Length: 242
Image 1 (cartoon, rainbow, N blue to C red):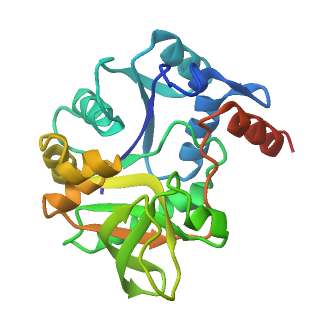
Image 2 (cartoon, rainbow, N blue to C red):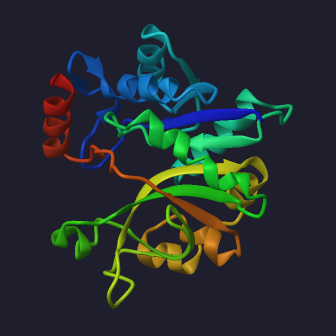
């Protein structure tokens, strides 16, 4: 099966402008992400960006980049444009969307994200991690998965929310925003337009659920550090310098 790993990267972050090129232990953040994505061995890895300097930097470090428009509303729209540019004949079957602000991501969890797609009824797969800290359970910046267990390490997603849910005894799961799409699912997803719950929760994946698409979740052990603020950037520098 042909798999393409795409890493969307844009310079216009509101909380941390220019973050793809932020230096971490001597290399730009986007290069760290590309390197880790390459280590997972799933296939071709390409950074999709709207900024020439990002593309030039990625190429200077030996990785591949493709230019996309600057007016995309979401990373999914950006990777779909990149897909159609890189694979006009439609030979790629699976598209892995690795966020460009995860410089510490473990290549093993990128590989794990593909496993739910062994079930042909699954349209999109993603990752979850059990929440152990109380402050994360009540933090709206930590999206939660409400799902129906399929096995000890997998669930079918029923809903995603910023609220503390589901109610009652039992584990809560942090959604890790790494996705693998079947090509047909990505094509359908980007053609849907924003859904009501997506707008309300500000969670893009709800668009797929509202349209009746199936998302399965692979449970992993680690949450990659997402770099959204200067504080996150300093933490990433500490981790990767060690």
